[in-house]
Length: 489
Image (cartoon, rainbow, N blue to C red; front, side, top):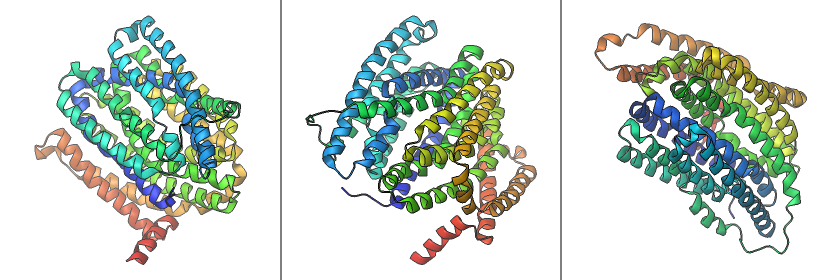
């Protein structure tokens, strides 16, 4: 089995992450205008609800499976046994969850009113058991995952334009989103026979998995509180329209977070492997690069989209979504916060079997988010949910930093704080000048075209200045990338 370099894996995962950016840029402007805020809110609510059931069905296997399989990936027999054990556990929990799901949809009036939408999402939940993406991540088979992901997204895009034409088509759109997320799972399962055997093992040992799986499940449960509960609480306390506004703001944040955390997805199996082989120097060298990447990439994205939140929402969602602008501005710091906590929690603590500390941090964040949602949503609606999310993410990061305070001192020395800060200040001034001096209102163009032109020009100016300043000050990461490019030439 060929294991590619981290650079190759990052490129493959980056392509997949980029597709997660490009496709929403194509689909969301269309869907938001067709379904409007209310229809969007219904689909977003169903998606948030099914996330909870999916969490119980899969327990902590999606994350634990990466670590467990990465540690035995050099032994096909042990790897096959591990995969079989995890699949058996998953099938049992999936069956029990499906029973609870059907009963819940039947008994809760709000869910029963949209039972077709919830049943479609339930089918996606069942198919998720066959995804076994945790195996492919552990084996670092990112080329296959990327190709599969791209094909399904293209098919989903075609289906969306063919079948979704009016607000009543929100159920059809819900089905397409399920197809986009789960269509490749059966192929994943069949293709897995290339790496593992599904012939029954002589003996199974489920006990070794139960404790860590439950810990990862607790982490997933706590994380879901402040990543999905806000949508559910917003729906019951303020209605579908506010969920539609919030979903528009969340969409932008999710796209950016996917881009920033793409490196972390690639590094987890490799870092787990380094821990198993006691390659401490390689472990911390890679962590240092990850931190530098998150700061260099995450900070400018956060600042830029706070400056141009109104134009971003206008371009992506169109008229009728200005209620999403303030929530988006409030949410933007989470791009950097999640990027950093992804390193401290998933890349440092998890590979070293310290997921209990990650769980502690997430529980603190979940409690903070729940309490703040109760207080802020009635007063501030979607903006309150956004503020609660930001504070929750900050709490998670701070708790993890307390656990890692000695290690972080050394790692943060690799971050060129002054150089990055200077570049951000100059870029922000340039970006603000573009917004102040560029007058497009007299152009006669539609608001969408004005927003697009403004975003295109301001992005070139902002990120162009940012990159030039980093090059002029010879920032470590950027200079290394440029140096490698020049050497290849």
